[in-house]
Image 1 (cartoon, rainbow, N blue to C red):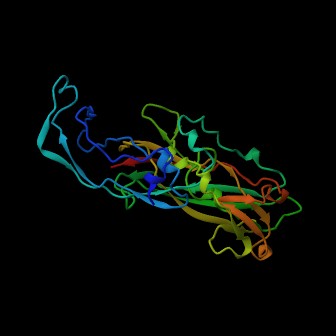
Image 2 (image 1 turned 180 degrees about the horizontal axis):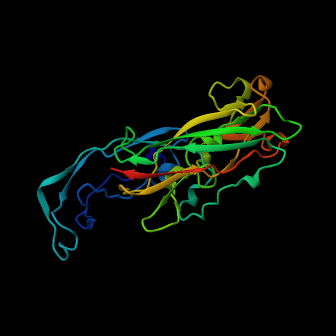
Image 3 (image 1 turned 45 degrees about the vertical axis):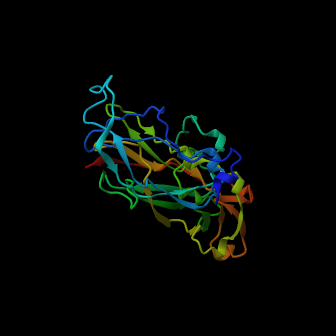
Length: 319
């Protein structure tokens, strides 16, 4: 795909060098990390189809302007090319999945405060009662990383169907699993928090705006037969049964270090589609899906199935 020629923002010029560009100087200590910000332009993003996986990576290069010491030690001094140059090898590939989320591209910037967790009183009296529990280890090693070099913290979540109201006591329930899969979300679902040193409050980790663009230009809906679904997008449970699944936390703050503390859990959410019955009962039920179930919009008139916030699993980074 020739993104440059199709962009309404004009042709993207090739990279150039200029002697008048002032270099950005940074210092870095041994065994520490330095985050260099950057991102894809909106002109490019609007031509990246959703539900497609891309690879982003540093191909390698040299840093000729460098020296030992700190910025303070080199204040008012001219820094010239040094031989040999610092070689920065190519890094791991970062997989990027463009998802269709509910926020417009123009909304990138400061966000409103994240809503509070949804508690048990938010349940609807005429809906089944679900609860969710998460489990994970108390520590995460800095060495435990994904194939592309990102920290990875696996958790196990268990969704339980506790009981149903009269006159549906004992009835099975079938539901769409969308709210328990995919990316962490600001509004509901799963969320990572961190606690800064010498502070008691937990702060939410904000996901990068790149992962929350709403690529509505490429949105499509697909008909799915609930009772004949072969993608495991629906689950059926009887009262007293549970469904367990795993998630992997891999989006962390930049420049994390041993001793940093985090907690992860489910903030609560309303399931986008559910109904009484099992797979056999819904062999002829068709819903229209684009991530979540979009049609029927009102879930057939049934009340919201609210899953309240889970427990929190807290963990500490170790070497």
